[in-house]
Image 1 (cartoon, rainbow, N blue to C red):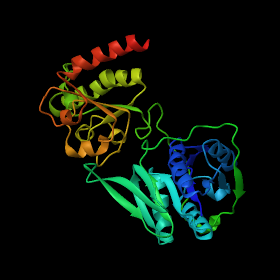
Image 2: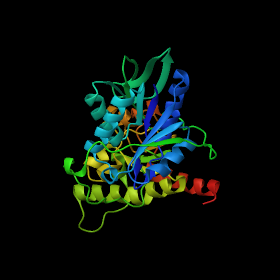
Image 3: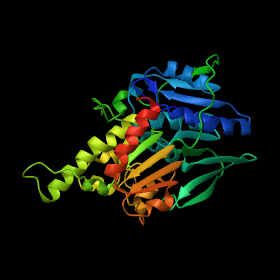
Image 4: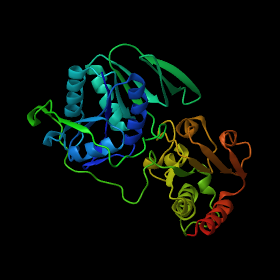
Length: 345
């Protein structure tokens, strides 16, 4: 028996949230008195396995075959399923990124096992695994239990702390062959197009978000830009000249409500909410966001919420620890200037 933790990688480097999965896995492994085993597939797997050992893993299973260089569901799921069938771990854990959810769901189906997703708390009752996970868009917390066989679990990012790093720790590494050959894999990865200069919302400790209220920019739109086009121009200018400087001072990611995205103020990649990203930062600053239930579903887990809005009756104030009623175009620049002084920037 063991606890498996899949270490997600990209271009031969571990995705940092994977260390949170090892932190969650350590709790279970210690409680069950079993080894914590890191699974590392793809480029530079052996080196990433060493890092996994420094981050709490007792053992590592690696496969650095060329078929696993880039993430493709079919070869990854086939290998994970093979390892689960061979070793019968008690748990398979991963952070609930898009890849983590896809991989564990596929392997859980292949092995006829249970899957518990979006977990924010893990407990043991003897050898029975009990979890807590959000329900109804985060309005409630539900309890669930893993019953029999292997339980697959994806955890919510930033819900668990990584283990303390021990640079002197060693890890027992075992190599394994891939489950599929290249001619059995129909998908090919040709290239990646990366967005440069932005902070990943899922990893961000601080997020500054804007909503429909960004269109209340007092600046005049350029000559000839009127009506809806003027509102879009004003909002886009507000994101660029008002919110981005605040995010820059704080080292924050830039987010947005669905209303702002639908109106064309900012690309979808920045959307927070039920149909966008679910985030759990230490600090969430909502500017000109009313706080519709769909948006709340995406940021309810934030540790501290600050709301800035003209409408004192906006639902966002019921969630916020700190609320500022007023014009964000006056408040945010003043806040940015003061933070620059306080932080020496």
